[in-house]
Length: 121
Image 1 (cartoon, rainbow, N blue to C red):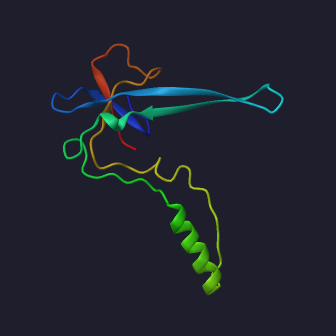
Image 2: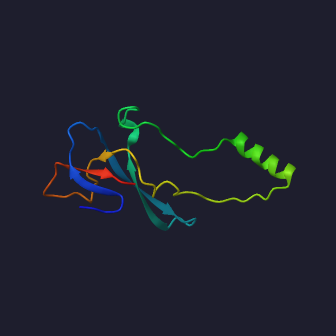
């Protein structure tokens, strides 16, 4: 079974599994009524070991002092400042390591329960 994010494959003997789960949240409007339902799929990568399951990690973060320094340079040098929101920049990036997760709830292949999902993105 294939999709764009994972593929169902036989469970490898020498690889560790990453557990996963779906998180659900109800967003409410200001008057208390239900505005929308949100869900998020989370692979719990904290169970992996550096050097065995992966070589390096990268998380796009910025420090407050860095942002203040850039705004100061922008003002001092007359640069144009632009803001953008990058919520899903790394969601569609292919990964180099082999990351195996248990079959995702709701997407299980019923006749082959011993299989797992290998993440592609």
